[in-house]
Every structure is written in structure tokens, then in C-alpha cells.
Length: 258
Length: 235
Picture 1 (cartoon, each protein chain N blue to C red):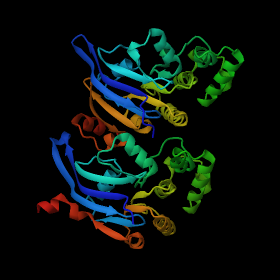
Picture 2: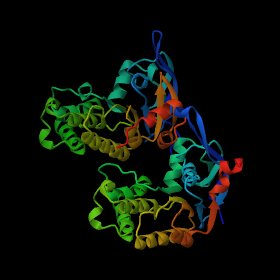
Picture 3: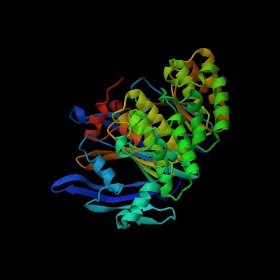
Picture 4: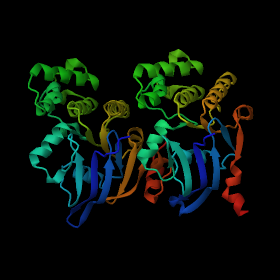
């Protein structure tokens, strides 16, 4: 068990004028740990995800990340260039809508390989062969490498987005409803893929979802949000099997049994 | 004999906020310990709180108060207050749990379901699968099923996958909830033998067995859970 966290969030709040996006959220994330943030629409989970992933500056609080040299750096005290480099190499961000995370008009191979250039690879043949390996890993047939993601189904686009993010060997990946809007069968396949990649690569993941079944399958720990605040947190199976807070009990009791 | 599990003054109730804050007391003043190489069996009628106790021991249910002390890598830790990370580490290395039902993951084969606790501890995929295969053969699960995800299996087949997964590790504490409920006589015998082998290896086992015949064979001691019932105390 490693004793140093990878990521430290302290008192993060975001206000939109008089409205609260999220308020006073603190947590730590360790290498290999998957944290689910759950709650209904408007509970502040996406605001929180954006605040901790440098996509939206918080109104208050700090977010620190342990760099590869072992030093913690406050993300909002880095230069914009440093932050962008971090996001393109050591981090990944999987959007709910693959079109937000892919370039829809360049080939699948180029989409997968693009981030390799950010870490200094220039040899076309090497980039293409690594891209091909990753397409295979996310179960996209190699004869689709020159096709544009516009021609892909929703599930394939999402798998391509995952390959594009993981190709640089990131240590931390943010996911915003990665299985939202997909058919159940496509969702199951994607969940299984995410689960095995996370295990094999030892990734730390922060995943936002409103689907408690997804949280149960993928996460170790979860935080339940309501009105911008974390109202309950703990081991995923504990929160789901023995919810303590009234709102968590309502959420859990609202799951439809199949 | 070392005592890797000590339960002291544990109390548990459910507060049903959706039912106007109704309080359902489950157990109170739970006190017992389990020694290495011993199989203690929780007894008492259904609904008395046996499964709830196992779930608290595993960190799956929260505890109102009291301590659940576990020897983990030379240290004594309290499951009732441990952090999620610590609980996961204890589950990975020290405390195993054979639940009543298998929670299946889509697309993962039975063989890999069984091998998973070993690969999680760093064993190579091939060696882990080989060991998983041995366990499944021992439990007479037809080889044709090994590569299939267990979600379509019969109750007894799923239970055997679950047992194989629970018994494959060298956890020092093992919690077992009705492992023989849907098994035929031959496989019940295999489970009895697996439990006997764990006891010889010095594993502390705590379980629930409704089958009196199996209980007779494996139990060293009965813990009467009705003694922890808050209703009885009130009467």
C-alpha cells in the first residue's frame, strides 16, 4: 500500500454569482484508486470534476498533484503551458460525448497517436504502430485505422477516445459519464474494457456518473453529492449496501431491479 | 493460539430515513473472538442478524459503535474505523469473504473470476489461472464452463465459482455465508474438506451454515446470535 497520495484536493468551492457549484470539497486520491462522484443532475459533480482537472478555476481551495519527480505542485500556480503539458501526457480526460475529446475529421490512427507527439515522438512509423496496438487493445479492428471517427458508432468512438487518452501512459484519468447515452450492451462492453485497463495499468481514476451500477462496478470509493456538497463518502460497497444519509438512501432505493 | 479477529461491544441499527427515521435495531453488545485454526459458526433463526454481523466484519456495513480488531501484517487494525483504503488492503491480504451470491461482472470468464484474487496480489496471469483451474476441478465445475462468464450459470454452479474464488487465497481470516446452500451432497463434501484444510493451515473461519449436517462436521464452536438481539434485551 503506497502511503503518498497522487492527488490532494483541499476545500475546493466554486460559486457562480450567488449560486453554488460545489462547496468545500476535500479528498485525496492514491495511485491505482478509482473514486466515483455520484449524485443527480445539478448536484455539482461535473463542476467539481472540472475544478479539480484545471478546466474551471475554483473560487476557493487548492488542488495539488504529485509530479513524476515526487514533488507536489499546486495546479493553479503552474503556468498555463505546464498545465496543458500535464493534461496531454500524465493525465487523461474522457468526455461523455466522444466528439468533445476527439478530432472528428482526422483518422482514428491520428486521433490515437496525436498525444505521442506531445511527449516528443516524431517517427511516423513508430507512432502508427503504437496507435495500431492501442486500437487493438480497445477492440477496434485494425482495418479501421484510416477511417475518421465520424464513421464510427457511439461505442467505437468512446473506445477510440479511451485509446487516445491512455496511449501516453497517464497516471490519472478523469471520466465524465463515460458510458452515458450508450446502449446497455455497448455499455457493458465498455465498462468491462475500462475495468480491465484500469486494473492492468494501475490507473488512478476520478469518474463522475449518475449510474450507481457503474459506480459499483468500477470504483473503490465513492462520494455522494447534493446541492454542491459531499453529503456521504466511503467504501463503494458500504455506501451502496448501508447508506446512512437520507438522500443516499433515496438514491439507492430508486435503483430499478432487473 | 493467536486470535486474529476480536469483536468487542459492537452495536448496529438501521435508520430508515425514508420511513420517517424509523430505527431498526439489529444487534447490540456483540462480543466474540475467533482463533487461528478454528471454525466458529454463527447460529440463530433467520433475521437475527447473522449476515449483518459478517457484513460488519468485512466492512460492508458500518458499525454504530464498538471495535472489530483484525491482525493485519503484524498490526492490529479496527475495521469499524479504518479508512476505505485500509479496508480494501485488509480484504486483499488478510480477510476473505464467500458471500451467499456471486456478483458477476459482464464478460469476465469463470476462470478469471476465480483467479482474480491471486492476480490482484501480484501473481502472474498464467499461474493464477492454473490454480483457479485446480479449484474449479476440485469443485466439479465442468471444464466447458470455465471460459464462460458465470452470469448464465445455475445457482449451484455460481456458488461453486464463488467458493473457488473465496478459498483460493491464503487469507488468515475467512468469512463464509451459507456456502453449501445450493450444492449437492458430493460438492458439500468438497466444501467440508476445503474448510478442514483451511483449519489445518491455521486460518480463522467464521461462518453461517444452516445445513445441520455440514455444521456438525465443520464447527468447533457455536456463537448464538440471539444473545446479541436488542429485542431480547428489551423484553
